[in-house]
Each structure stands twice: as structure tokens, then as C-alpha cells.
Length: 316
Image (tube, rainbow, N blue to C red):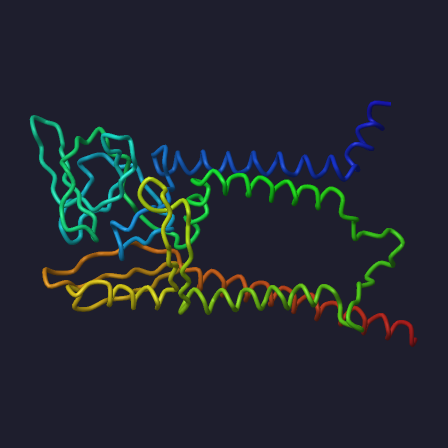
């Protein structure tokens, strides 16, 4: 009796939806814990909220932070490590280490934002969180949006609407449909083909924007003390142009690319200022597009082969 009840419960769509959400939350929390352990820090990912490190780091970037001991930090005005520390107000600060001193066996750091004209006050190594080892453009804007209480309410309402849609929207599965039969819309166009076309257009648009796009919008959670500010997201080549025009002190900009990342360095009058390895949305989108279309092409060719074989068998 109990087994039959469990079987019925397992087939229930509402139960499956709730179970999926629980498993998704567990996966995210587990993945976050693994990342914390791998990067040796409690804060492996943080959103850049101010323009003090522009153009090296833009507002809305998600930075990847690796735990590091004071001895591992390289301090220099041009190519020093970009570090994360907590100031006296317990705020997170992301600046470049420009000077390090050993006072009676204790390390003291002086940092400075690439976009600031003055250095920060010296701080004790006990405030060190880690050093920045990479950045992912754009998506840091989402956690910044959550700094605004009004946006949190909007987000919660949006999630509730999605849950209601998934729970009550009628299932597309019909047991009476013949095996292999496809849903058709707009004449004789398969619905799957419409989905695939939309996804292709989206990925191609993402590739174009991630290379040359620029978009400015108001983010109410960005800026000092989350007061809000206009934020601009850049594609790779747009970011290079921004590096060239941001400061009169820039003599030359160098773009280097590797697998799924790129790096932008600037030659100033004082020397070469190093950038941060940056996730390449364009490369990721190209790989997804190639895999997606290749997989669907193989499925189409296999289906056509099965149909030809079936017709031959029927003609015999």
C-alpha cells in the first residue's frame, strides 16, 4: 500500500516540481561550498560595486577571489595583485596592492584604485580576504540589483509567478500522440525547429554583443553605499576602446586571448599595467552554438536515415 502511494506521489507533477527545486537549491549550495574550499576563501565571488578600479574592473563585474597569505601578495603600482580586504567599516574594498611593509613580523599593505588619485590608508594583513584571479563581465549586476529592497520584492514576485506557471501550465506530453510525431505550428514547421531557430538567434546576438556591444542602464544597487548609478557593460572590443579613451595617460592597449578568456593590459607612461583574466562570453557562445547545431544536425540525419530504411522495408 505504501509502495503504491509512493509511486503515485512520484508521478505527481507538483511533487516532481518541488523535488526539482529542492535538488536545484541543494546543488547550488553544494557547488558554492566546493568553490569556497577550492579557492580557500569564504568569499570566492564578489560583485564590483564602485568605479575605483575602472577600467581594469568595471561596475557589475563578478570577480573571482582566491585566498592568499600576505607573503603571496605582489605589491607594485603597475602590476601589483588586485586584492580584496575589509576596511574599518567592514566594507569590502577591491584595490591594487602598491606597497607592502613588514613591521615587527606583521604585514601592512597600502592599496590604491586604478581610477583613484590617492592611496588608501595602510591596513593590517588580518583584513586580507584574497586576491583577484579573474572576472566575469556583466553578471555582477544581478547581485547588485539585490542590494535594493524594492528589487528584492520584484524578484520574489517574479519567482512566484514562474512557479505558478510551471505548476499550472498544462503539460505538452500527450500519451495518445504517436511515437515520433512532432508538433507543428505555422503550417508544417516543427515546434522544435522554431525553438532551435530562436536559440540560434539569441546565441548569435550574444556573440555580436559580447564582441562589440555597449549598453548603459541605471542600477539602483550599484555605487557607494548602494545609492545607485549608471552602469555600462562592454563587449570585448568595446572594452579595449574604453581602456584607450578612459585615461590620457594610456599610451597603448594590448588584447591577448586564450581558451575562454582574454586579458587587457595598458601601457602607461610609467610602464605596463596588467589587467585581469576575463571570461569570454563570445567564445563560450560560439562553442555552445557549434555543439547545439552539430548535435541537432546529427539527430536530423539519423531520423532521415531511419525514415529511408522504413520506406525501403515497406516497399519490399
